Length: 67
Image (cartoon, rainbow, N blue to C red; front, side, top):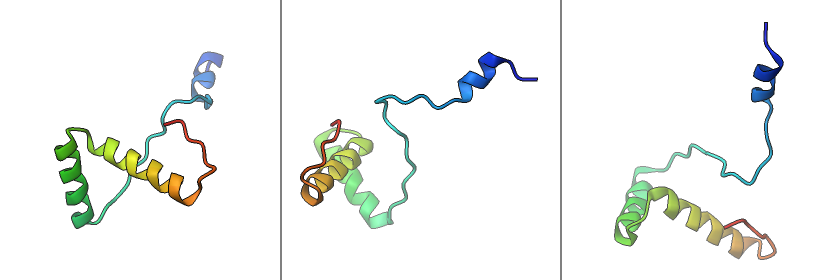
């Protein structure tokens, strides 16, 4: 039997926290992204987030992200 506390933990809490995503890339794209990350001394995730933000800014100029 679930307690009220246990049931509450399963509820989704809205916040500004980042959302985790699992993404697959073709090997050649992944290698280029890794190279960019090493060159800039940042994580691969940072490179992908930056690319996504730039894409949104170009395609939807009125989009206001949290970045």
